[in-house]
Every structure is written in structure tokens, then in C-alpha cells.
Length: 304
Image (cartoon, rainbow, N blue to C red; front, side):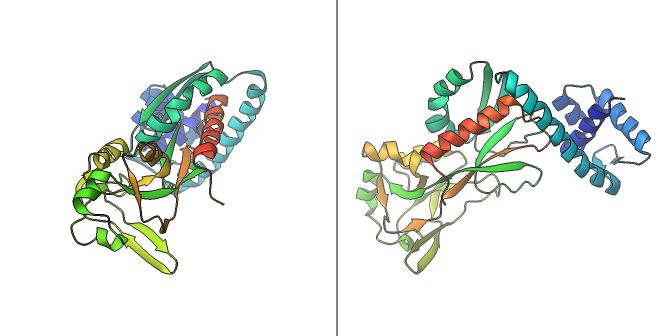
């Protein structure tokens, strides 16, 4: 039994909750993963996992062992990376997932510079606003807006998106320009709603002017779950939008959008890059992380 392979197999079963999913992400057969875990349990003389026909649960002993295994695997990966990165340029396939507007407007236009710097990396980009199963879908890392609540992931704060409120000239001509954010909750104004995958709900936005503080959600006639569709709905005059400034900027310059409530402020949206703690943080992953941090520092630097 290779103890490293056995520990890696055990950790991946705990994280995926399945021998089948663990085997797929490790590029092993389910039989091999099962045998490695059984051999590990025999060596330790402890049951690490409870198996049923439907699911796999970690035992109390297994949970304690998992915490130590994670630290050991991370230390081993760091040691290998520090040696190999000094002598080898980043290379290989890298799979990442980012919000669709960020991919379209910031990340993909900047990729020529990334490939000029790292010509031996082959990148697969998933552009979506859904929650990605990083381990189950074998994704190396994700970039997401809002706090990362999954405690099993390592998250790095890479930027803060400044937010503003906007509408098209045509919309304001039809319905008038609101003088106060409370008008978005009352009267004839409509907003475009954004459905967050994390909660399955639309969320209110906190706005402040001096000592006055309100939560405004608006009254959406249309709700969407994709950032590009959200922007398109606003540009079509279907309602008032809350947008990161990088998304609004091109349309402000062209006159397609106009800013509202400029004397009000909103807390910025934090952006995080997240990856599994025991996934090998190879030279190619580190290269992508560093590059994303540079990109966000240029377009949406961390506040404070």
C-alpha cells in the first residue's frame, strides 16, 4: 500500500461523500479507491468511514484523522511545488470557473497577456453564476462574488467590486427619475431581480447617505440568474439595475446607462478565489492565482 495514495483517496472520499466521485477525480477505478481506504483502515485498526448502499459518512475517528491528513497533504504539496517551480515553467491543463460577466468583460479580454506569460498552460474556463462542485467536477479553482461560506475551501480575497445603481435613458423617460431609493419599493418603478444560487433568493442592497441607512430590493418584474442576462435586461429598459462599476462603465461611456442616487453609497462586493485545501497547488494553479490577483488589483482593488 502506498500510504500517500491511500491518504489522498480517503480525503477525497470524505470530501465528495462517494467512492465513485472520488475515483473519478483521482483518475482511479472505484475498486482501487475502495481497496486503498480498506488497507488504510486495516493499518490503523480503526474504522474511518461508515458505508451504506446510498452514502458514505465519516466516523468520529475518521474526522479527526482527516484533519491531520489534510495538513500533511498540503505540506507535501508545498514542498514539491517549491522544488519543481524553481526549475520548471508552469504547464499543463487548468480548469477554472468564474462569473459570466467577469469572464466576458475582464478575464477573457486579458488572457492574451496570460498566455504570453505562460504559453504552456492550457486553460478551460467555465463561465457561470452557479455554485460549482469544485471537487466533484474536478475544477482547480473558482472566482466568486460574496463571502465564501464553504469551510472546506481555501479562499483568498482578491478584490472588491464597487456597486452603483443605473437605468437607461429610455426607462427614465417613461417612468421618471427616482429621487430617493425608497421609490424603488413603492410606486411605478421596476427593478431587475438577480437570483443568487447560494440562497435561491434575490437579496436587498444596503444603501447609506450620512446617518440614513436603508435596505432596498425593489420590485422586480423580471428575475434572472445570470449576470450577462441581468445586464441585458437592464439595457433593454426592463428595470433599474444594481451593477458593479466595471460592468456599467462601457455603457456609461456610450450613454446607454445613467447613474442614479450618486450621493448614496453601498458596501463593495468582495471577490474571492477559492480552491480545495488538499488539491495540489501546482505551479500552474499558483500562476493563475497570482495573475487573477494582478487583474483584480487593476480593475477592482481590495478596499482598505
